[in-house]
Image 1 (cartoon, rainbow, N blue to C red):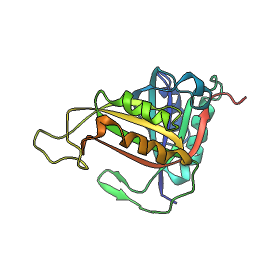
Image 2: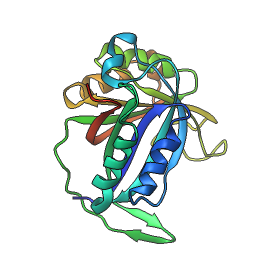
Image 3: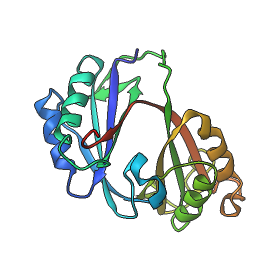
Image 4: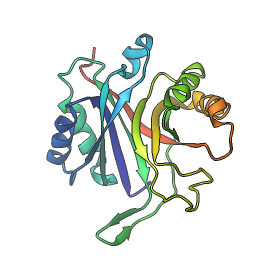
Length: 214
């Protein structure tokens, strides 16, 4: 088991504080919040709670010992919200750098039912990537604005040419659909040139739909 976990929750805009407050009250040291845009079609809203609307993404890193308590606190904080309110899941963190020190590493992985797929493309191509992912079985995703961090002429990142503006897509998908989604994205014309985008997947543990249980 990894010594740390990152809890990730995707909820409607202006809802992140509800979960971050609950996380701290449950033992977490704090969290981070970013904004994105949901991209799901109406037909699968009941599954993931994503629509074409503004979202907030909550990130909380906590020790493995505290993960269950923090996660349960965050889930409870959304229990009175109409379902689907959002989703919550965890990913293992093998190493943590804090105040200059590196804590723990353990490569043991748990069997999971879902994976988090992250796709990074040049700005303007997120909709194309998301459309391809949907056709391959993705229910929905969240698009976030990002940017490259290198100056012109610097080395490329994983062979990807650095340009200032990026789109980053986060998709949570069932294990059985992950490879088809990655294959579909790889075949996009906008990604035909080597180095025009990257994608990777990692296990998403404790996948939970937030909101009132029916």
